[in-house]
Amino acid sequence: MFAKKPKMYGMPRLIHPNTFLKPTTERLGDVLRNFYLVPDYQRDFSWTKNEFKDFWEDISALANKSFNNFGTLVANPTPHFLGPIVLQEFPGDSDRRLEVMDGQQRLVTSSIFLSVSHEFCAKISDLDKRTQLLNSISTLLMSYISNGVEYHMCLARDQNHFEEMVCKRLSLTDKNAYWQANISSRTPKHAVINRIKECSDFFHQEITSYLDGLQELDRDTRLSNLVISLLELCVVLQMKVSEHGVAYEVFESLNARGLDLQQADLLKNKLFSISDTQGTKKTVTEAWEKVVRSIQQQSMINLNEFFYFYTIARYHFLRQSDLYRDVIKIVSSHGNSPLNYMQDAAKCAESLQVILEAGSGLPGNLERDVFSLRDLITNKFSLTMIIAGISRYAVNSPDLWEVIKLTHHYVFRRFVIEGLPMSTYAHEISEVARDFSNGRLADISLLRDRFRGLSKDSIFMDKLRSYSAPNNKVGFYVLEMIENYINNNAGMFVRRQSGSQHLEHIMPKRPTPNDWGHVINDHNYGDFVNRIGNLLILEADKNSHIKNKSFDYKSSNASNLDYANSGLTFPKLAKGYLNNGFWDFKSIESRQSDLVSNYALSVWGL
Image (cartoon, rainbow, N blue to C red):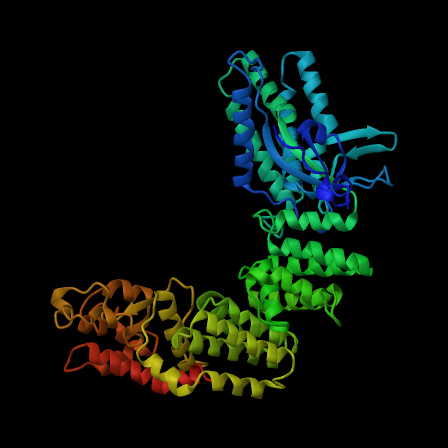
């Protein structure tokens, strides 16, 4: 016999848990009968084909195991647990919708599944069964009341697209017609209307395959059982919270350590919660949406990364995993608030989007600097310095352009050539960014001095003299920067990302014994082939023609597809570095040393 459990161990009962959180297990069909509002701090409907596929496989497998070959329900079918749904209720306001704290993706996907199923159910031959299923689906999507129609789901944004494509238009043809009439080349791929379209197309295709090849009666039975499985055999753990502040905390606790939401989603939730109590939620929401729109229009960083780099550029260094915690501390500290944090972040995001897109309205040299940071060096911590510059200067200010140029040169020197470890480099550049954005570095001359103190000319040049490019992209970039410096306003330019120009290895990657026998067996070959002194940029037709031939043939041949006939500068000069008539390791060292001595500080000067 077990002893009786002591009553609260002699302690007084402090709370009644059901006043905090009311959990119940419900069938999905019963859950969908309610009316829901997705609050504005929630992300949009964002599931993709991977999640749709998982959802479909769960429901179709449930139907297959719950009904036998005759279409009859098996004894004691095992339900499928669809997951928790967290809702905020409002006991004092019976007309107010339940707010979805967690579970939006599953509820919306279930609604789309039912919407697509409606078209198939409309073809069921048995009138009673057809009528029953069509009525069930319709009443779970929308209800007719005295004042008109109430849709069971109300999204935070793009509700009109949900109503039209899910509730009103119940055939694939009608859905497609609405979609085609309401998208443009400017509509992002991840927009709600495109997500709904993708989900609808997916389920239509899967249901079609699921029923393919069946006789009419079997098809009708299988379809009916599929819908019944979703509504009657799927269960959710429904948790209702009635206290507003508690609802926010439950939302964060459920998602903070999971994969459902990223830190930006949790950050939005908390910023909206705090600003709601301060009476600034509307303005904070508008600022948040400006940030989202701006970040969606560039491809270098996502929303989490923007807030991370913005915060370390303007406030203090932190680990990316601590972003949510640290930002909440910042906006809750004296003199700060969600309002001033988000308004400043919105201005920064809008300017950053313009810079990262390197639009036609920006000068050519700035485009070159931005492209190098964004697509070639691809080091995202450089954004801290761009953000610092944006905090002080307008996008069209030459002072900002100078900040970006200096950042480009510093990052190439310090991170790429000098090989500073990432952790050290991250702290270093973000500290400079904060000092500049906060005015501790009062002007650009002091910023330049700071960079010079971190990246000494002598160390940079020494490292560059022995530098080997890790890939063709970096090798092309280095030669492009020097070649275009020489040809500035006076000749042919290297065109990055152009098929008309290639990176040429003078001493080839795959040498032939007859042409390169003097170096091919030397153990140093691999160390020299990617050295900057062995690289050229060359027109594509010439590069394709000379391939791995000898230096003499590359330099001059009867077809005129050679170095001598290049429109660029460096191919013509290569023969000046031959060593006793051969291109060898000494040639590479000598040429690389000259490139560094003659051009490095002019091209990447601080």
